[in-house]
Image (cartoon, rainbow over all chains, first blue to last red; front, side, top):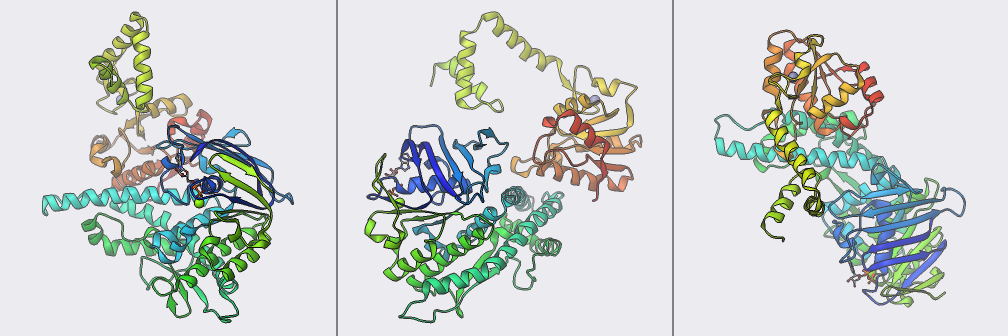
Length: 387
Length: 199
Ligand SMILES: Nc1ncnc2c1ncn2[C@@H]1O[C@H](COP(=O)(O)OP(=O)(O)O)[C@@H](O)[C@H]1O
Ligand SMILES: [Mg+2]
Ligand SMILES: [Zn+2]
């Protein structure tokens, strides 16, 4: 698929933009702070209903404006995707409103899957070096891009978790203040346990299936990115899903088994959970452990190895989504500046065949020649097609 | 900030559900500009509803007397009780004309985030009603969302030892939604296809 046209109203620095785009490579060039990332961030928002840079929506709306609108028409050169027009209206603090082919949809998340992107950004290094939350987000976003119904599963899980945490917190407070007399309000905790186990098992099973699917893709991509004449045999990149239930639980994507295991783990931890007022097991506490050869990547891998691994994770996303029938839009936001020449070349080689590649760079020379294509200079709100 | 009384009105309006600060301001200025008779009618309606309307001592539905119309109607079957979250759900179910039993209005659903547990709902009153043995079936028609489901499971577990039939509205209701937004046909069908709740 490719984005044939992008329109923005009051998104980030842009009061209004109409930007026609072609399949193939388009590079946005301009000094820092001119609004290059803002453009690709908008496309990413249509794909994930979130930004790769901020957790909240408020910074996405232009200062002084009340709401932002992002609209794109999507096409496919080979008719694998039906041409569609998607639009989302972002009002901080309120539910987003979305339209698909001009008709309003009930919930914004119904547009997920219409635009699929794989975005490479300088922040990706934290996939390897950062907290488990970064890797959980990686998995969940890919899960939703692959099968949009998981957006609902994910939000159901988050809702159950919030309710259960609220109950644990108040139960903990009650337990401390009554000192045995009466005791905490636990009559409904079993019910939230059951809901958490069901929703958690669903999310966990989907993640396990996903990890199985990308494991070989990541390993292969890592070899392609990291292999060079200087080091002909890079270590093997490995993925292992680490559950908060501990190493004794067999991790097979069997929902019933996982729900039972979660229930069991919660009953064992009940005391601790009440003391601390939070849910201690479930997919929200899990991690995806990345290793290179015998060593975990986090804390051991060099800067260059970490970058190769981060790129491999994104490339694996691309391969996986591509295998569904239509290429996702590939976005390379300011990544070439982060990479050495050999990694630049390899990355360019691997992504060059994508149906649409959108690149941003402060310096045009950082972009490998093989990614030649259209060029748009970005200077503030002025977008100028140069080639 | 506006002068005392105007700001007071905006603040009061802003406390209503679904009314944000901007809407509160708009409504306040609409009232300021409106015909005095219109405003008086609104004010009277507000005070009257508070003076005349109370909650049915049996089922918790809104009532103009000690008991609501449904509880006073001898043609309604006292053996089947439909448990709902709010009075507005009673109205939605009545529209379907499918149900000839009585109701029990809980006053919400279990939601720890909002500090609502069983004690904040009319659960004790329901247990008292069940205790005298008239009720043989409880239809739990809480909203088809997480909090509604949790409330349904809680009630089912609670009344299970008392030996009555506990059913839940059939699926087909839009999940995640409010009962009151379901159309009459869907809601009617959900009643016919109600199923026994597992606990
Ligand atoms: N909500 C907003 N309202 C107005 N300007 C914004 C907003 N968010 C970001 N900006 C501006 O956008 C610029 C950053 O744009 P960005 O696309 O990140 O730059 P780059 O070209 O370096 O990728 C900054 O100058 C910032 O002030
Ligand atoms: Mg940038
Ligand atoms: Zn009544």
